[in-house]
Image 1 (cartoon, rainbow, N blue to C red):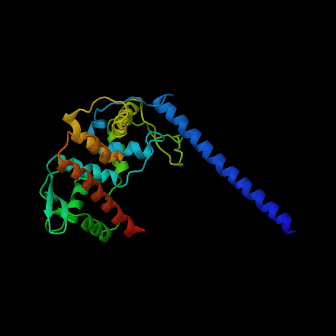
Image 2 (image 1 turned 90 degrees about the vertical axis):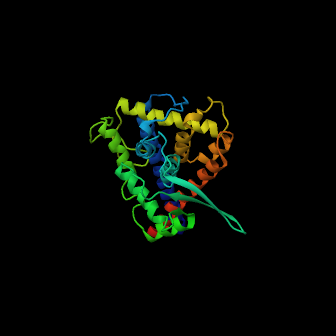
Image 3 (image 1 turned 90 degrees about the horizontal axis):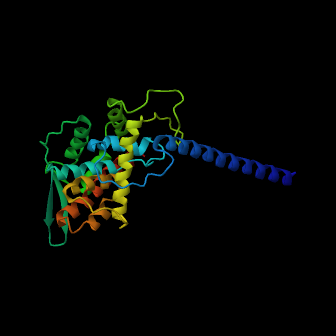
Length: 278
């Protein structure tokens, strides 16, 4: 009797494992089929350092998180890191270094009177203003503690939805259709129009260029006139540190330090919020 139960259990386990494997195979096939429809049958290999999507980071966030098998990554601290570096390059943040007998401490001083026209970007900016305290200095521990004390939605809105609106406003997303495809994670999405796909392709081509730069693979020389924009997207792709090291001859020591500081501040912002909501 016990032997029959053991055999039955083993059979059920085998069936369950086979069913799970089959589910993921089918989901992968659906995602791959959709990818072919969106971008053609060939993998995107072209490298291009043009800034895509009119520089809209929310639109880039939408493509990275909601379009299957394009970049297929979820943005956590990378989006705030990209904004922090953009604000620094625009002069809204200043680098501050304090030396003590024991150590050297790096901060970003934030202008609390800066004007940001885009409502969603300004919402994120104001959060960092609050996290900087009365002295206006962004410190990693202080940002973490502030974020922990203010749990809830990381941004106050869904950045992917804001990015989708960017495509909708330009009529680059197909109308709602009950037959919309599913991603390999089972999330229902709306397809991009051919014009929208061309825009999305530009983001992939930029990532290919920056990844080649970071990994020291063959690629065109970097355009130093747009190096701040490229580092901003490097933050979005999580490779800004590698790029700063590769481009060290073009960057000041301060800029190199700021690249890492933006990443650390954004990570603290995400970690504090995440710890509070766990």
